[in-house]
Each structure stands twice: as C-alpha cells, then as structure tokens.
Image 1 (cartoon, rainbow, N blue to C red):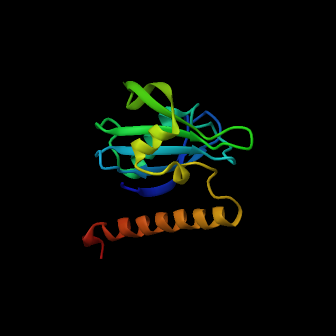
Image 2 (cartoon, rainbow, N blue to C red):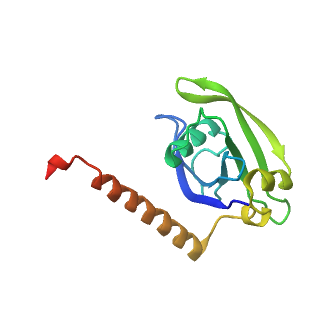
Image 3 (cartoon, helix red, strand yellow):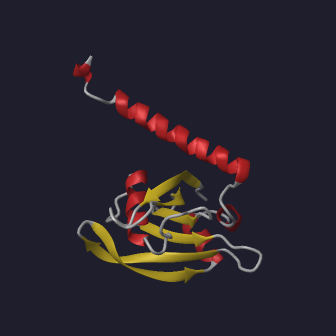
Length: 165
C-alpha cells in the first residue's frame, strides 16, 4: 500500500469580499490505483468558511498547491471532519459536476465508510482519523509547513533568470 506523499495546510477564500480566509489540512495520497487522493481535514481553529461551505475554493487551492490538475482524471477529493467523544470521524467524497469560470462547480457529497476511505487512500483508518496536531505538536507541524514553504520559495528563486547576475 502506498502511503501519504504530502501533508500541508491549505488556505482558501470564497471570494475577495467574502470574509476571512479558511484553512484546512490536506493530505495527498497516491495509492497504486494511480489516482491523486486529496483528504481535506476541517481544522478546529478554522476562522474562515468550512471545507464544505467553500468546497470548490478549497479543492482548487489544494490542487494548485499540490500541482494536481483539477480537471484531470483520477483526482479524488474527500472531506474529513474529526470526531469527538460523541461522534466518530466522518468522511465524504465530493464530486464536482463541472467547471464554471475556471472553478469547480456543482459539488455533490456522498458519505464514505471508513473501509472505503482506507481502500481509496491505501492508508489505515488510524492514520486518517482523529484531530490534526494540537498544542506543541501543532506548532511543530506548522513549523514543518513553513519550512517547506521557505524551501520552495528558495528553490523558485534559484530558478530565476540567470541573466540577473
């Protein structure tokens, strides 16, 4: 079974005049099926729109961040809401009917069983379920994400026009 290949925090916005930016955790899995499976987890401290209310924007932003073609075959978007003492984690497959003005449109949701999510991602449900890191672990997770962003920016700077010397 293939494991997660990337784990990032993704920011998205419903539009320029629609309130605060949302943030979610997105994990990219590339199972042996050849699909790109993106699992978006709603964060407890998200002060912007939920991954459900801004499904189109969160999906487009995640695809851009991971370099995945949102129009390509084999792109799967799964929404994940961590459980609590009263409720188990929930997972929903989100399918978009098409593209409108360059954005995915017409989202439809279908609840997934934990076994289906494991099959689609190639990961054990224990790896997928639960809350994202919090407290000190969250600080370490954010530091890792920031470190990756800095490394990417530096790599992009190295690729700039060589005639700038």
